[in-house]
Image (tube, rainbow, N blue to C red):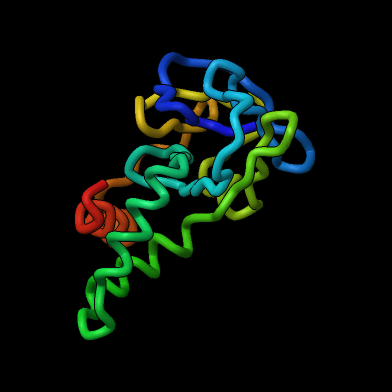
Length: 152
């Protein structure tokens, strides 16, 4: 089972559930039965108040861009650290589920009901009543700067 394989676009809004093990089932229309790289990245995005999920093609872009950052650039290194601290690798199981960790669930204030929103090349997972978007804190500005530096 893979998500976003064969150039699928993530479109629409779908309702879902977070189970007791912090698993969510990705909408069926966003999955395919084709084999493929199953490494995804889920990141709480404070400026959106949601969890953004990057499919394998975007994960590769992040990997490539981050490999260009040198340790002699402390601002970019700090930005990457902040992104890394707020991200986790997730794998889609045979049932189409990914497991989020407690840190991301708490940051996004996810409860039992969740909303999946397509963003074409990524998708977002949010609470029906997400936390207020934060674009002003130092942490949020650092994440936004890191994403911009990575071309995302």
